[in-house]
Length: 170
Image 1: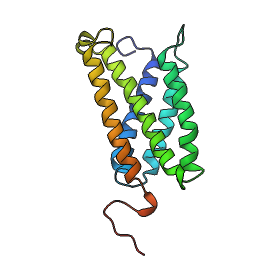
Image 2: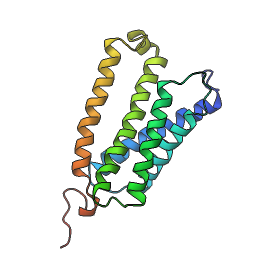
Image 3: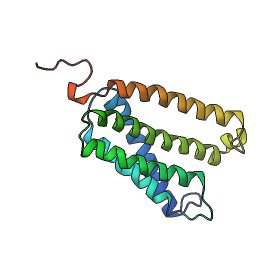
Image 4: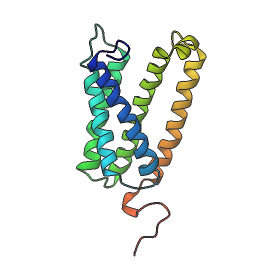
């Protein structure tokens, strides 16, 4: 165990971090560049779904906000995955996919910020109850970044047109 972390919790944290990292790769090098990244996208979606699913396997005694986030993530994934793999981003499915996948990534990052404020002593000292301004500022900044990048991603991600800045044969 790492710092008293049970192996299953370590596994859950590891797949969560892989989901966030791969999601950021898909955001910056895929959606914002209007490129399909099938391998990275598959890793992102699989680990994001696995993060939500394994969260329900962690011991708990009462329903927590993390459970609500997990339920919301699985519902979103039920639209995002078919939008990409069944409907192939046709018509409205493109923006449903991008906005839903961005929201999934935001939820993962939101939880990461919560966990950082719980587990990192310097951050925990700044916001011991997570009701203090440093926590609100951090979460507000994350939300603002995701709104901006989400709007840009929906506008820019048109893989049928090719990558931004490239000429397509007519």
